[in-house]
Length: 247
Image (cartoon, rainbow, N blue to C red; front, side):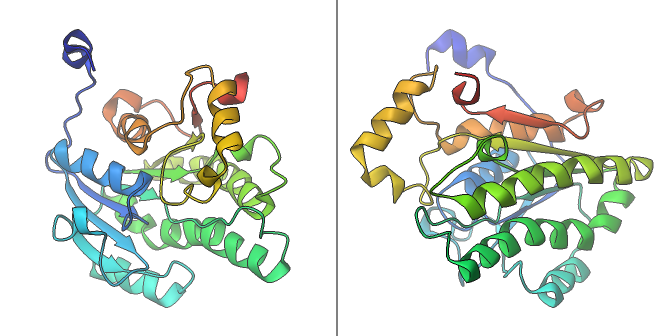
């Protein structure tokens, strides 16, 4: 990044804030968001289904192994949490080309949609107490179809709708609820699709920004939505896709 751009880079101050990022144990969007909040001064905890996070973040954050399909485990984590200002829902799965199988379709929806609601519901009282913010991670597939990822697309469209509904329901509690809809991002989750050179090239060619996104490209918008700069925003779903969805 050129020096002048670095000087203009957004700065957020989350000193004193407690942040929990659900689904941040691997190299990807969740981990990038967790790092960004920590660099902005927040106390950050993360979860993941693995026994421990990937090596780069091992020991960096307070970590809880969590299966978001296990309601009792989600409730137990909420009970152990004293205070929370920001909850970020990143836990999600997808498998390009395999989601027409009904049982797997149901599992994708259970994790991506029901998991997001389970955690939001469990931490509602914390966010109410702190007049906090909930940020869900949706997807550009919330806006248009995907023949290779029907379960993922359906679940993320539902996450965008859930965001709107919770924004209305929880506004009297002082909780802002927003979402971010990433485009094609270079993550472990997208690794399988990136083994197809034609697909990789087609995505870059259609994207006005001319490239795939990086996990850090999503972190800034999430911090913005959690910050006082977005204090009059709730129920929105920000597209962060390099212009792919409008091309």
